[in-house]
Length: 84
Image (cartoon, rainbow, N blue to C red; front, side, top):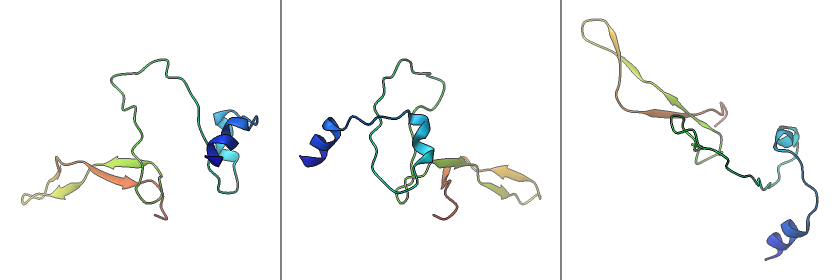
């Protein structure tokens, strides 16, 4: 495949910290090594199906009949991209 050949023959590499400085849309390949997994932290990336931005877990509250508020048990995820 041409894309794989292009990647394998490309000798331009940049630190991952430079991803934020990319101005024009482009595809990037991130190569890394997992050295440890913290089991009490969420290690995977929940991304929006539309724009791929990070999803944030929200807690939905509701008013009870007695006037107090409570949090629903179900998890609600919202895209962190305000334009999505």
